[in-house]
Image 1 (tube, rainbow, N blue to C red):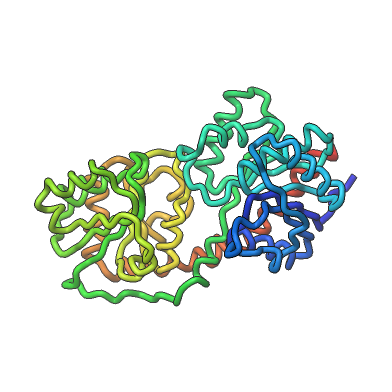
Image 2 (cartoon, rainbow, N blue to C red):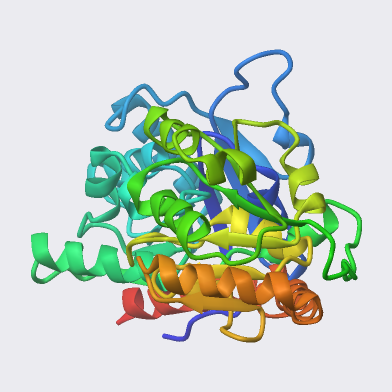
Length: 372
């Protein structure tokens, strides 16, 4: 039996977001059929995605094993006759698997993790949903996450049959959300703005970043903006150091993050562990033509290319990080060149069309396995 080149896709999710919607529209532009099942609108001000894509039902999910919701899901499978079911949220995925188990349909079920960047941030329930051997495939935002999930799945289930497929998000969409940003053309005497958008979970490496700028950056004409949740330990560290007090500002949560990207010259992501995925903030920085300095582990090294769109430094090494920062501070021409190349790679390698093509290739893979 051959596998069709055109697919009917039934999407289960609690809600959508603009990025997911654009990818589904791209599938439709390629000739595939897309139907969506969402939860009911939560309020009168909630966005009604039904005006933008075919929402065939709205099903309230009362827990991960809701039998009533599972029945409604199974009814939509029978009605829409999809080739594959694509689940965007963990709860919807759990209900879809419950529906298939209780109502015995054979349509492959694929889990897609949405915007979660790092495996370490997942809830325990998410772990066991995405590691389920009943699941046909999981799309992972980076190879770092795919490796972690695959390892854990085989650890719990030695004969796990699932597919853990890397599908990079269409980060090129970010270029459409703001004005085009060209080279900064800063002078060597201009104050350099460093930026890190991250919370203070240890995996993010903020402590290493503070060590680097306090002890190992020779330049003196710079400011580091840290945007995101910072606890007492980070704030005290800054307050107790005269140099950090002078150069580092911990802003906490901000609603004007794009303005920080516009003002910045260099973006820094000092990830500490391989399990950390591609940070959305790193992609956003690239869309603003910023060069990225990131450690040589995790999803950051999949999004950036060393010496072409950014600089990779040895993980956990504040000396190496300080040297990388100094290098770009002192060389604005290289800084601009790396930033321009970073923006270009979002539009080519990480385009929305490439993301949709990767999903289609995965659909073919799971359908071929089903037919065998």
